[in-house]
Amino acid sequence: MESTALPNLKDMPLPELEAFIAGLGKERYRARQILKSLYQQGAVSFDQMTTLSREFREELSRRAIIDSPRIVKTQTAKDTTRKVLFELKDGNYVESVLIPGKTHWTVCVSTQVGCRMGCRFCLTGKQGLTRNLLPSEIVGQVTALKAEMPEGPEIKNIVLMGMGEPLDNYDNVVKAIRIFTSDHALGFSTRKVTLSTCGLAPMILKLGEDVCVNIAVSLNAPEDKLRSDLMPINRKYPLAELFAACRDYPMPGRRMVTFEYILIGGVNDSLEDAAKLVRLLRGTRCKLNLIAFNEFPGSPFKSPTPEAVAAFQLYLAQHHYTAILRASKGSDILAACGQLSGMGSNL
Ligand code: SF4
Image 1 (cartoon, rainbow, N blue to C red):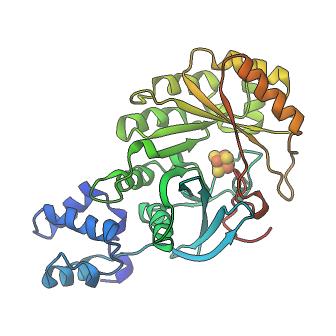
Image 2: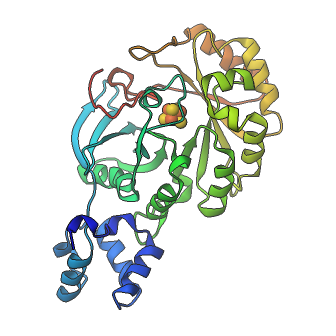
Image 3: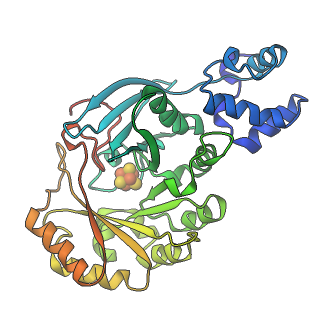
């Protein structure tokens, strides 16, 4: 059999790995041992899986592969945000961003090569979709970055907010989340994993049934006409349907849906827009993140003025909505929201 036809152990969350191992006539608990050696002991080859017998390792090496994407370039911004370019096996590229916090890092991972959602303010959206990432290619961004940084602050949060629409690659993204959150694998709490979507309403509800991580919805407009103009997905799932899905999303405990609102100069940043937004949000428990649009070469939009941003934020605060202004990290290396291109260059 050609080695390329062999399954990759890193594409399998626990249930699949158990089924695979059972298919080899071995005990199911071996699957947990394999996950531990891959994700907790950092094994990158069958030889390094020393908790398994030599015969079993040899058999595994004939039946499967262990493969992850490779870091080919890292750029560091003035604020220490790092943009990391990964090469995939078929020669495609994706980017992840490491965002510094006071005591830890947040890693923003990609879920597709390109994206077919076509949001007009987004550099990734301009490329169209090349292909979905496999679970190993999504998880591999985090494991490669963890391995790069053995010392210093840990990666404590994962946001699925890089290139691509995660809910448009649903099955692979759910498998990746299962690997992120399994105690036998990377062991992240579901509280520490956030999936960002442009608003595929039915898939939001499905996600809530399958793996209930935090969700962030990229909103960007307070009414359907403008939102449909900025984000074509709104024509399929307009705001009423999107908000119904958000309200029904079974967030455990006191967690809330986050709405991301990119303020674009002269487009959606007026006080009238803020007033419409307040009306739209009424009745939905939520948090708001405001992000000032980052211009990129060839972008049809402008950044908002600092005065417009401050006035918008103040209006929301006066109407009892806490809107955090997210500092746009890494904008000097095009690592900020909506600026990932998978080209790793100083475009
Ligand atoms: Fe795709 Fe997100 Fe960009 Fe929209 S903002 S085109 S969903 S990557």
